[in-house]
Length: 249
Image (cartoon, rainbow, N blue to C red; front, side, top):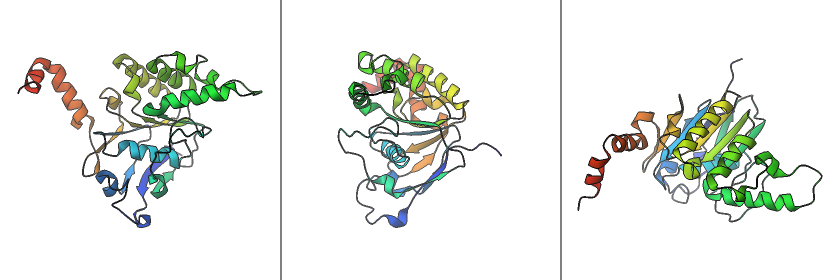
């Protein structure tokens, strides 16, 4: 039997929604959403801030049992209850395969995850410290980018589903390439990624499915047709020309 992704597709239970004008359905892309097919290996969500990509990826994570602020399914802290109830209206189609590992990485709340790990490790326990699974060096004693890579290199163990919300936020271009390398290694070990990103480097992952969120809908798009790729390409090919246009009065 051919291997399948852990999550095959995602749909909105529209008949359960009482008010399409309430948040998060007030976001046009979410309001018009019906269903999408997820990639066996990598699915990317792209779009401007506020178009709903992080809202949807958060809802997927919560529906799968992850903490809304990030971490594994064992994390249950809450710094601020700000996530939407979108997960209550989503339906996931899963394969017969069950992941052995999983993680939800939110760039904006990773500090809170690191703090929670420190707090848990201070409590009496007969087992190993949680930080040992992250490379043993306290995450707050590393730069943001270093702690991100420690997570991805040490905590992600394969045969898992990994949901990442803007992981490039703390990563230099070189470290984004390191992330791609690690992703490829994990994917070869039966892992599936769902990623919201602005990075044209990450979006280049081969054969990834890319969905663009805009002020009207969610639609599938080719890598070369994304605004992220086109603007970056145009700038690098002729930065002086683009800056002259940008700085015109």
